[in-house]
Length: 318
Image 1 (tube, rainbow, N blue to C red):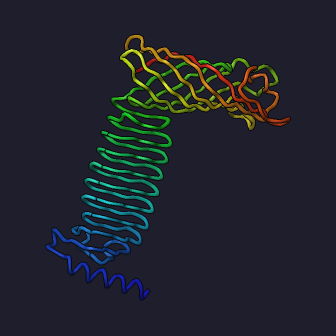
Image 2: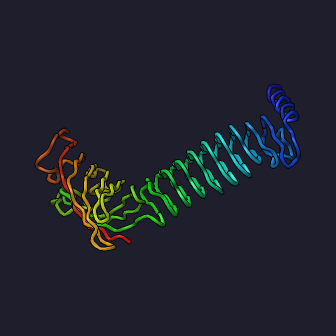
Image 3: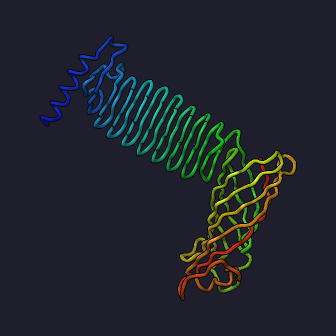
């Protein structure tokens, strides 16, 4: 307790040295429990801090270097440097630097730098990277959005997520068929360069006694290499499961190189080779594995194989 009181007295003395008018106060160091219980007292909302340590929730006008909050940091105007919040960071205008929050970051204006949110990130304009466990939301993104599930933006050329709702991007429904007999309908969404894939389908090659059902689920990420207006090369990393609601499904993971041809405004035809890794603990599903392989492994209770396959498809682009 004595150490805390000593730190608060020292911070208060520093703040007196840096204090200016009430509308434009500056503090070298701000220590608070929850506003107004801190060294800036009732004037926290009018104070620009160089460094802030907020044991629970901090309030300030601007932050210029480093801000740490046990729960949340609330910065009414601009933030520079590093902001770390146990739950959240809120910036009322512009942010620049690094923001890390266990739950999420909210910037009501532009943000330039790296946002890391355990659940979500929100900003008006982004120059840099948004990285979140679930959702990123922005208006205009010049950089990368990476989300565990959904990216939402007006403009974003490089969204990396399973679902990407980009107003000026691309969304479509594709039907694909591959060398092990998976026929899948998938939703594909993204920007100019990257896209996400979510699909469901059916495997017609499974013989009776192999699997309980032939339902297929797939998810993946793709990248476009634009060549000319009507031709591009798609690169896809996908994981699919056959008999996906079983305790012992067939797992197939692979990379596909897919030349794609645009036909009119809405249709795209694509197809190409793939390299895949396939495994299952259900040895009765062995007839699903290709006869030719680059490598085979496993034992009496597990089948493994690396093989060259193919994928073809057609996509309707909204």
